[in-house]
Image (cartoon, rainbow, N blue to C red; front, side, top):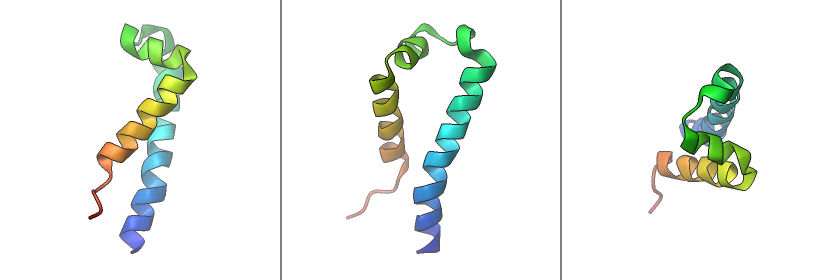
Length: 60
């Protein structure tokens, strides 16, 4: 149970921190597709949620 909790809390925080660091470091040198995602915050949010869902183990 502790592993699942750490995954559920740690993964979104890690993705958020990674995204912030990447945007600060290479903001205007990112690929065009990523720049379009950043300009439209809803797409950026939905892409992040999709990555979290893909990275999490499926529960049956």
